[in-house]
Length: 261
Image 1 (cartoon, rainbow, N blue to C red):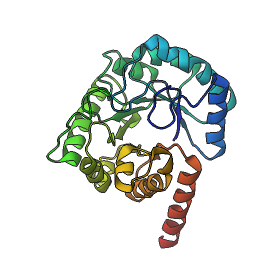
Image 2: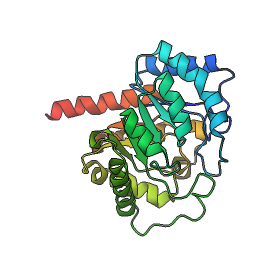
Image 3: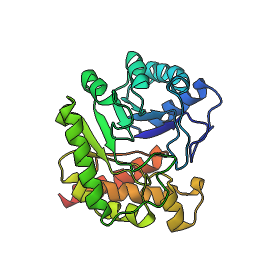
Image 4: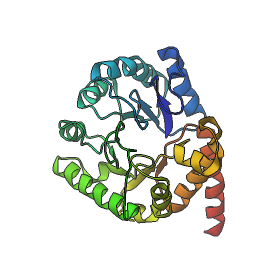
């Protein structure tokens, strides 16, 4: 899953694109590098990020989604917590909803996603982007995250979202300490064992910087290590900025697995 951020303030690539055409070209390049779907977002969810109005979010998204729909054949994932934005995006054509609030930020989101019959990624997050890193605490991060995600699954299905359309994301870095992120990575098979497809997003995140001492733009090797861990655990999708590095790593894992079998 290639990351395409249209925000001026994302932690890694905020403000990268000078125009919608530049963003579309970047999305095309991600697909050329092997992205099997694109995750497009226009609101920063980094720790401390301020909220953005649906109108401003859609203004950033509209020309890029339209341009991508015309130029790439892979599914488009919309990274939003706003039902108003999803409603507008459905008229352009998006194939998946990636909601970092697990459908909790907007009361209309669950029923709208259900009526659209699109897959939904439910991501675990405690607090909001503005507050989530203010002294988060877990006694058992994998167990608590799993329990809260399964509660979100029940709510999603009660709203009419089909069981096969629910994917889970443990929310690495979203209201988590370094040790919590590591525990979640260590226990990925436990999440996969639910039978739901799992999405993992570790690309360039601050916990990798804490482990390696590397700046944001120097964390690709550490990111690739998490991609390998995800593949070995049976994760369905990795959400990455450097698609080529992820594809190379996954090709090696697949080749070794083929020899074992």
